Length: 234
Image (cartoon, rainbow, N blue to C red):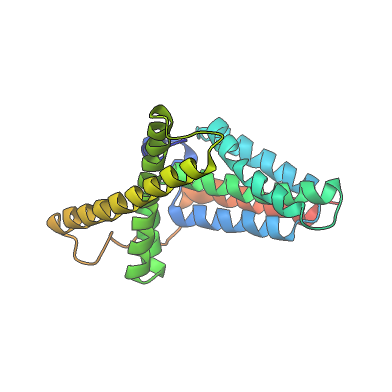
């Protein structure tokens, strides 16, 4: 599992053209790719778009092997959904490509944009309470995932997991989840206390400017190219 520190490092340490473009341009890029995935009727067009995103990510200095691997997690859920409907191999392939292409675009946004800039942009278009809630959810999710990973390792090392005993496993897992809930509430209280001490008064970040600038050509042109591929593919 890739932790939030690694993602933050990728987003903050890069200096490529995708990093230098504005958050609003990358949001438009994401919307264009999502639109292409929604209207696509051929898996080949989206596969070409996915390849274009891969090339742009590599040339921009993004960690494209990790991004590509993470984007394929969406294929698992798309495959499960495609199995529940009628259709052959090409329909299932189309569903998978419709899932991994927007996923790759979303990951390109995340690994090239420090999270304060993302939430600063959200604060410009959403009510403050919603933007703050999304910010806290983002941070807390990775903390809870890390705690769950530690819990799973601890229960295996202490013999709390027995492949042949459903009752024992259920009891241990239930107790572990209860402990995680208590720890999560405690951690949330501490985070809020620290934020108050550091001056939090209802505003998470300064609102970002939503203007485009010349360095935004790469994400915008990439998004337009993927959409045109889907629209013009015969």
